[in-house]
Length: 442
Image (tube, rainbow, N blue to C red; front, side, top):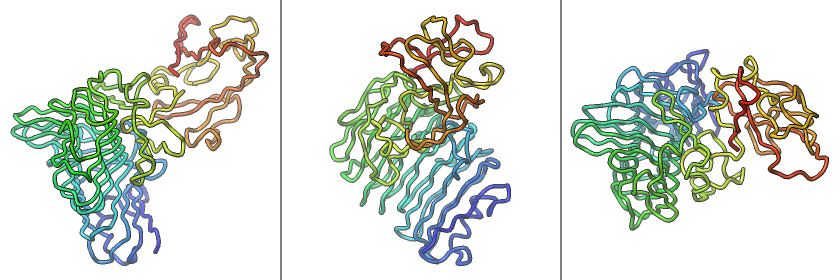
């Protein structure tokens, strides 16, 4: 039938809450049987609600998708896109009543602001469900359970993939988990390319990054990066029947071919500082290039936490939710408090040559020797080298916030055949002396 898209937000949207949108999924006014229902979530304000997604048997629909709208999605860090910001203990319960209707929840964030959970952020039960590309964090419960995503039963496919989950605590006699799977699957269950960090327990039970209670041939555990889970990054630490490979752990529990144990947490991420966590991979991370290529199965697995298509881009897969891109300038350089040249980020201040030829380029910050650097142009990070769009005309300065990823193209005219190592990309901050250039990691 048709794809029916409704907007969810507080500024002139179709629905002001998730609950109101869900209530109409059985309604034959906005939908017809076999329609694909899409809820586009906007970052007008953060939502703050318990939510049950129980689309029933009235129509039924062909599929249900709830996702951050294009342009409203997070960038892989908390507070940058559409989603939840809790003011009390909450949970979402995803339990399709209509058998076999695919549910997709993706590209949203959930900051629990150190409130306790009503057991978990999201519980999935019985349906054909995909939970992907979420950032969820900051649940602190000293008396009860603490789970990021809990999967119960599996009569249809489950896909838990490309999520970043961190800072979850439980207490009392209850366990803590980044992801937990209970049940014996009768179909495929995928736990792929998730990043999980800092799962802890202040009580008498255990804290585990990814806990799977059944070793079954229809379970797939691949490309997961888990650090600083108090008792175990993975449980079990080995499988006889499940497909487990190319996982990474800060302890010795990573299982399967190509897996890596004993990684150092501080070497993996841009930042683990409380309140400003950024679990993108940093230069030199053990996870970079260490994953296995999962192609496009299950559907959507190729899209990393920021929607980069690893398959189309021809990437060598990393372990975890983030796919690093060679040559990226890390966001820690482009921070609002340390802008360059009175708020402008411009190549003339970002980049210089190590050589000191007198023939200089545009303000003297990029020197010339053997190559003539003719100009620069900022591009958006929205496609491959051929398809990415330009953000500015040539030689036009750009001001950027820390959460924006851009590309920079520099036009160089070669005069002869210089040594490839003759030039080094560098930057300096406003107020720095000309001798204080820092190397840009590439």
